[in-house]
Image 1: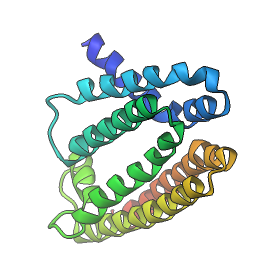
Image 2: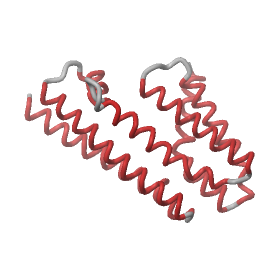
Image 3: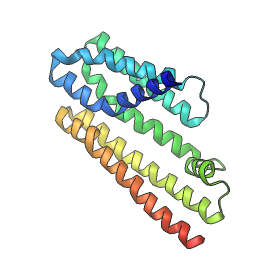
Image 4: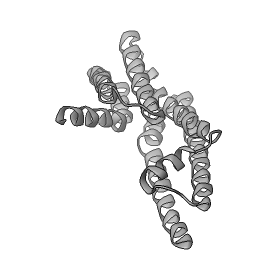
Length: 189
């Protein structure tokens, strides 16, 4: 049990630490030794997700695989710029996951809400669909800015956006949605 937890933590650290490790590896070529460590973290993330099913788990496996491939390709080709594309991939995968759920009976957010809350009233179903749409807009915006930072080629802008600003915006979206959800739940109770 502790080994699986350790694998999960290592994978999480790889995702969170990715922008800073990339910045260090590109800005200070002697620190490219971080790249094999990043690849290992992504492989450990894949191992931690082994056996898990569901759309979210498949998306996380795909992202861990993408991180592994980008890191190994960067090491092999000696081209650390490839690493800049991981946030673009993350946003594209998350947009596909959230967006495709809008064409099914239950949106992704509704599935998550039902897992936690059980049955939802019609207002709750409409609300979760709207939240899924908002996340799709976020992934389009965030992915577009991430793409722009890759194409601009400025590692400082890239790190500022992908290592700080996007996380802050995501946190604000989580917090704002949570506050609105509390208000909506009170209104219908």
